[in-house]
Length: 268
Image (cartoon, rainbow, N blue to C red; front, side, top):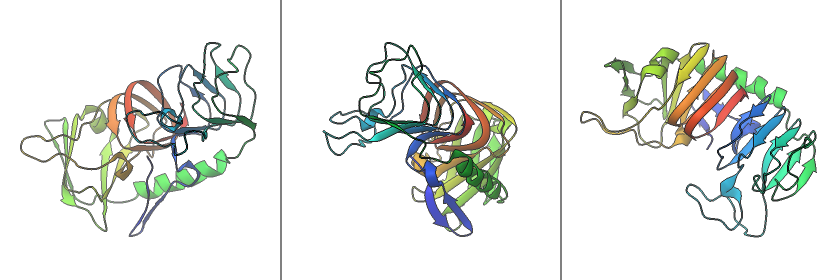
């Protein structure tokens, strides 16, 4: 769910965000849906009936990676630096332990947490996002590893092979918004793909890595793909995408769909 690798002059280290599906600096509002993994929020969180860390719930079997190891032990799955709001009907939505810096707001269910609730602020989000901003700018300064073909105005083709197991592609937000498929001819599952996306306001949906016109599908896990939105201030997403998202200065709006990977953003 995260990238942590060393390659050539590029060092990708997500530090305190390692192990979290969502790592948000400021406020988080998401009334429904769920995350398979952990979430960390620096500000206030309104999760409604959102399920947090469903694949950490001990003794359960769900699609995706099983994160629990002991059927009798809860994991730390949610960190909220500010106040937390659930609905009064929430029951066991947080599938483990909660660390809360503020308060559980009035009207919220006290039964929302399956595990324990601990008061505290264990993460320095300001320091973390200083690191992410440096990382984002550093990655954005890298040149294209190979050629880029934007065929039919909806098909991104990366024509080249990785260098020291890393491939960098620079595209615009408009290209990402128009693209429906991505093919990378010379990459394999052990490479790391970094896609730098320019633009301040970006609205995109599904991007598939399927076989097309005789070219093989991109066989890479989400943990080896990083979308770096180094200029983004606002991102709106719906659909399905596989890969991690680094957007340290963006307000991220999730409409619907499936994000397979990690999101680091200013707010949600």
